[in-house]
Image 1 (tube, one colour):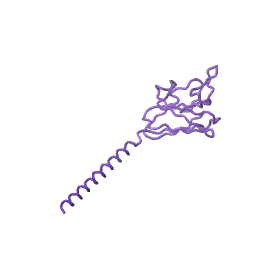
Image 2: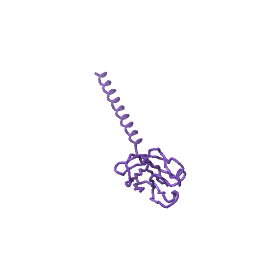
Image 3: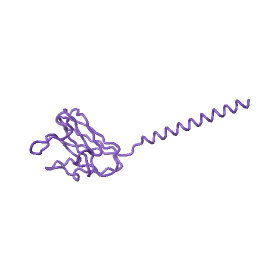
Length: 152
């Protein structure tokens, strides 16, 4: 009789320890998947043709107009529209540049006079003559998710 009581207690303890470890691991996994930054959703809805794709880069002042951004996205075009979301963006100043890569060569194509052949736009929607500037396109990321519409 005493042996059976000991065996039952040991089984109960093992079940309790297993349950506690399982709950601990589930909590750790849940915390690891917690959102750590801001999401920035960009919509471009005035694309003239659905052929090709849209390339977009999230830039800091250091990367602006110098190649790849700190995050880079691309999307197929449907009915003249794309929606892209940059995820887990840390607080700071950024600018978004986007272009319609109509021939899918992953770069901006230019005419012989230096003017772009493909449509482009940026946050701030400043389309003055000359090259874009970080200051005219910049925005500040804080703690809240952001949404932008960029016009080509």
